[in-house]
Image (cartoon, rainbow, N blue to C red; front, side, top):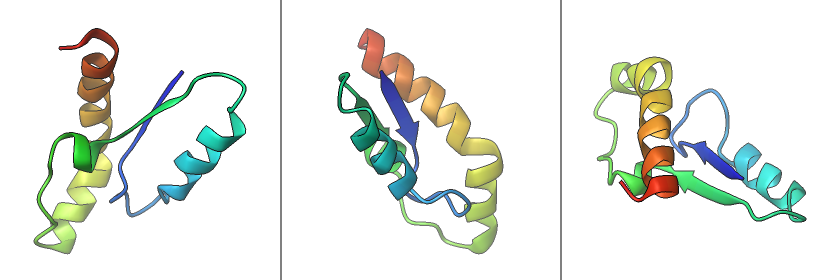
Amino acid sequence: MLLCHGARDPVVPFFNTVRAQVAFTRSPVQVIEIGSFFNLPPFQSEQEQLIYDEQTEYLLCMVGTRGALFGQ
């Protein structure tokens, strides 16, 4: 199992992902935190944060998941 989430998500706190990881301790769980995975810079504005949440985070999760699972 692999979970992907961004620690900078302004809507869903990252600790939800960490809690889910702990809840799934009976099976191996990998977590990708996309800010670290892609070495993202800090937000420069509130607008950037909203764009990240609405448009960017899920795309980076898909790319990061593919890379983590298939080494690409």
